Length: 114
Length: 110
Image (cartoon, rainbow over all chains, first blue to last red; front, side):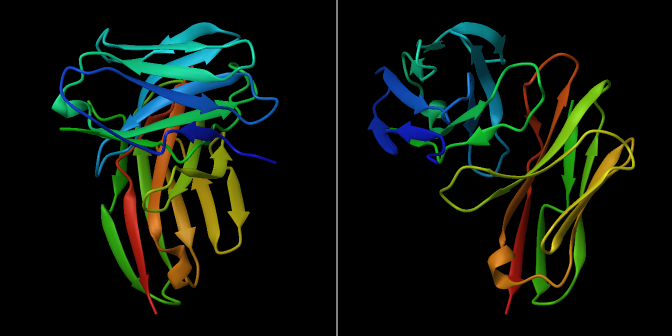
């Protein structure tokens, strides 16, 4: 069975640009969460979506937004990129939003801002 | 304030030398404690979930335990392929948001 897939794997952008990252969850999983991981730190929660609705938001500026589609895939958008946005962006999926089952992660998108 | 603290930050072991990694947490209303393994350039790989104090889970050379304030990941007779960063995370209240520690980087030398 395919795990969580993310695209692209690597991306290089310049300050001020915007970026869209994509995620396909494990088949049958309806909840998708996004995390940001900077070097040497644990992942930090950005968003959770379930059934196309936002169920949670972390402490990130409004430049960050996301959405979930009817097939449960998701996009993370970041506008007006800053150097500090350079990080590994991880997507995780779980069967639903309330069962406290483990989240399974993709291998992330490595975003570099020049 | 830090809600999840992992120690040590880094640990070097010889092959076969058993040890433990610590994860202490200060959240109230713990729903679950999760252990993940992360290899360089990869996403975290799920290992264990613990839900209540006294619970234990085992998988090959790894054993995870949980008390009311901390969790331990015991590694018995480690091999070089166990080298990775081990992440601990918790969920609390009605949220599925994972709150991670900074991780312990484990190196096992042959």
